[in-house]
Image: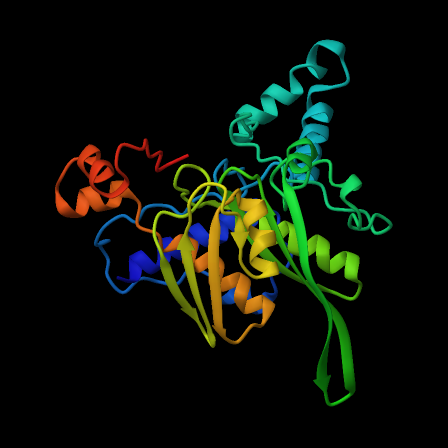
Length: 312
């Protein structure tokens, strides 16, 4: 065991001296000095520790160690002499000697550039040509119908006093069954509406519609203190519901619907209840899978001879 420890100490001293470390003191050199082994014959040979002075292509980064690589090139150029023929081979010799390699293009990750300090976030829709938060270009954003339903002032009470802010709730939809709502806060109303719009676009999902105009069946939904009842209606009936639900129906593309609200009529809870109710519908494809029968039989039994498009 003493010979194993001796080999480890020699390997550490060799690797550190090769890197040119000058942080050794006399005390540390004495600690690393070779000692006499107790056993005359070595037990086994120990593998040498890796040479830390050489460039490791896995653990070392070229960008972080660019100054060291430049220093190696200068030293190599001085050794070979300043001639045109050797100057071109310096880089190849340094790369082969220290195992320096360039990253392939597949491994290079292009991170988005950070915003300048003077550059601020877009306060209007015109500045939102493309944003990673919106995840859609501005041309597609113009095709969406946006409804700003709630904008109000809120106050957070702290020990230092009242901290005012603005709250906004926005509903975004394409009029063909896809919609989503988002909430946002900011010190200004425009900032709150912008953040709510981004959140609404992220939360967009598809809601099934019967005949692309109404819901598939009657729904009863409860969210907190709000109880909502929705009924499917015939063509030409219209949307006879609360004003906030009427605005959401325009974003989704629902034309015929009747509804009633019991309990709390808070607009925020009403909108959230309506979206949960639409998401809880059971479409014919789900009924066919649950009962083990064909989709054609489900459509004939529940909807007559009407052609049902469950996923439009």
